[in-house]
Length: 514
Image (tube, rainbow, N blue to C red; front, side, top):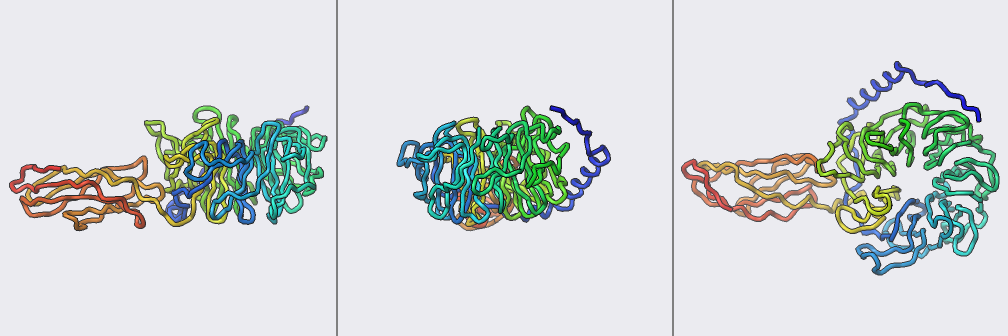
């Protein structure tokens, strides 16, 4: 095959201009980003699976879940308890989280569902992965169900020769991306378009390696495609490309957005922009997120966190991501590498300027490859997350969780320990280490003397930035008092600390007991 080695289309001057534009944007919008309203960090009661969740989709009040699992179990149930059979596919009420009777068995192949996408009207759910049967019906890694009654949509029966990893829909087409080389026995390398009836459409683009994400923007004359590839339509194009939605011709490239060892794992869009989740292969290789404009393909921002990003979603001006982020010190609002090797598996960022917002629910890495979250989906005002994790906020919870916009029900961590650092005549100085809260940066510290509230200092803190705080109380020399402290985020308050009993000095000499 002949390759045309295209010259780099952005020269040094253009790169400098982009950098200065981004820097200017950050300096003017940083303070505005603090006003972005995130979800709460308190997980709602959510069913669990016994395996990995790879895909989520929301349609008509239902959240559909696809993955590699055989059972689901209720919130709080341990593995093996109260399990209900669901073979790689399940459905839940988007509001209550309850398990729904909609159930089909996806088996054969690699026994996994990797992609879910509803039609634009929500009436049909398209399903991709690696499977050969839906219940007793033979299929070829693709299928569809009618959302009204969960029946198999029998008209949709395209044949994919290998795993389908991404699905996107428009009013007239269903785009499939993955590992395949044939669709309906015709050559389609890694990407194809079929009609709602499963018939192959003329759209054709040759992509050499798997496609993992597709976002349609037909109003801008493109679909944006991400994956592992290095060649598209006989040109050297790495990991991200925009294609014509009807022909498959290349309509935009994104040179210099991703280095050679970074690939695209997920894409999301809002009204005007799109967002890229990247995974770097090797220490320090780009692992973060990029914001781009759909109308002209301009880069809006590019963060500098380490830790491979697997999932991305956007809602009301906030970009949510699932990764194992670490060393985010070069991103506004970010955090340094933690000495204990801590990984932050969820992030929220301003869609305007990439500033990391104060929203820090977390999971562990979990089973499989230990990546934690693998997929995010917004259902109304609830953020659903799926993956291979087995804990959420350090509590047992496997593969599924969800976060609501309100109310905030989580108090800050337990009240800190009070100590006396100075005790002189009529003055008692208390000290403590700042607490932190997963979704509130500013906390109020309620200091009680003998049961009465005497002070309410405020301070901002985060899990990586917890400074020492002090308060000096004026009391009668030689008097004896009991101090306690509680911490509140304005809605939720910790229990008060254990009492610290102090006898104030009468002669300026330190004295105190606890």
